[in-house]
Image (cartoon, rainbow, N blue to C red; front, side, top):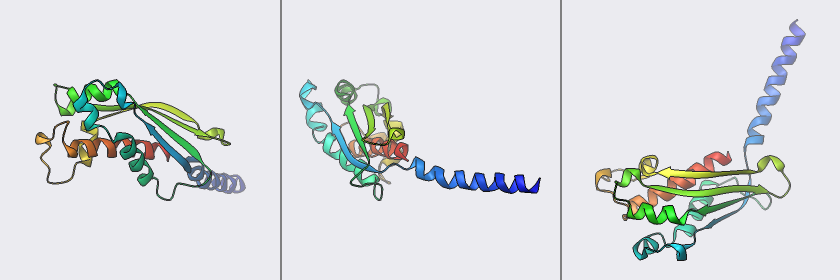
Length: 162
């Protein structure tokens, strides 16, 4: 009886020590695409003009220590229609959102594949607004709004990668 308990305990420690290694994903490449030409509203297009680079950099910054020559490829395709609508949204900044398709691929590890649609609302992004900024005064065309949405979107991706 004691032997079974010790074996069971040893097995649980072995499994627990392996699981964090399984969950962690090493990333070799991050690519974000946004088709700015498809956004008809010129102000929205100008406001979101650097989104692809900014989001890519935010994801990479969140992956410190989790990148390598070999690993997963993270592809993000931002929904341009939602992007333009969010910029023009009249219902309030809290209802605004950033939406995109996220795909994770890997050349040799089949356990690292994933695909999902990610939607981040400003309500979820509000913790990323710097302290001292009055959230009631943040609008969809402010730098604080833009930075918070980019950081929140990147944070969701990085946390899901493990």
